[in-house]
Image (cartoon, rainbow, N blue to C red):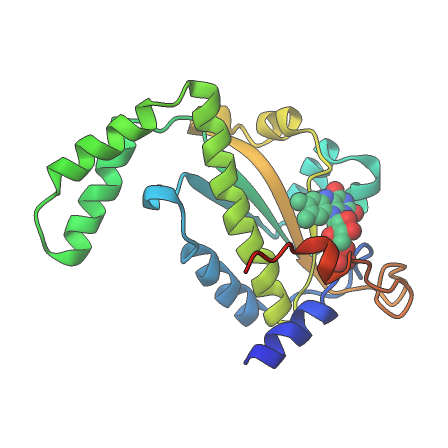
Length: 214
Ligand SMILES: Cc1cc2nc3c(=O)[nH]c(=O)nc-3n(C[C@H](O)[C@H](O)[C@H](O)COP(=O)(O)O)c2cc1C
């Protein structure tokens, strides 16, 4: 397992050119979505929502919000994941999670925990809370990239888009959401200039990454 994890991470790369006639395997996409559902978050807040877009028309429409270099990735990938954060998180959202926990576990709502978690989220300003929620989304996004690697799915992480334009195109404000990051999945093109045979992986050495204190 450890070897296959390392191999998967060595072999994955950010796919830059997709074959528009190919598509990611649907069964793998289902597993991928389930791994995202299982992503952990601070106080189990799960302050996120995902759009999984496969419609060619919709992918082309929202490519308008992407930087020029990323537009073809939006169009030519088969599955576009738009990772969104909630725009508010307060007492109601805390209660929703704690009610769910009580239902799943067959116990009464833990009012003490509701009060404690509500006080915690209220220590943050609105801007800090949004930042905190975006960090949770990135945790899920890390899980997305790792899952794609383990599932041998060709994917590219994409921050290169205009979030405000994306929010507008997807009418996210009305749903209490804002766009954070995109992940596109599909079939790599044989012309992909970023495949590992053409562009070796570039990473700092272990000593530059880790300071060990023993
Ligand atoms: C959060 C994040 C955002 C990224 N945004 C873009 C992007 O907008 N366009 C793009 O072509 N690559 C994007 N990348 C890909 C990185 O350039 C790539 O992951 C990095 O160079 C390391 O290469 P590798 O993933 O092939 O190992 C992004 C990667 C991450 C993790």
